[in-house]
Length: 194
Image (cartoon, rainbow, N blue to C red; front, side, top):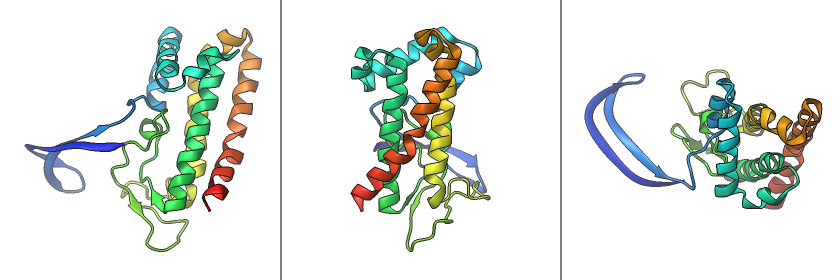
């Protein structure tokens, strides 16, 4: 994503210490995140999840609309883009910092990477965010963290996948199969970049 503006608010904000308040505005293809889907799923709002998925397909994955199972095609598209994105991060030595589901854009763009850094020297255990005390989002853990985030997206989409496929077991099996593609896609993108 690109920076559009940074504006001070004149207020003081308490983080680790008191800091000047500001609003940082970014431009992205959209601000739909895995966490957005989780919100609707947590509410048990299958219709809301469907509408969000339809919007995401129309905005980011229009070819998925023509697939036999459009919502599964959406999941596959997000997985493919995230595999490519994380491989690019790793090739550049980029550490996202706080790569939770609310900071994972479904468009395949890097979003909300506030406490981020680039490696000065190779260290797979390197973290940058002060809140990441156990290395969950360490440089070398980014592919695993993204795979976990994508599993949360698959969970959120399960109700619409089930309706789409007409069977809960088939939907779960398809989502699991889609998730297995992340590792090979990430590795292929990483090797191609090397």
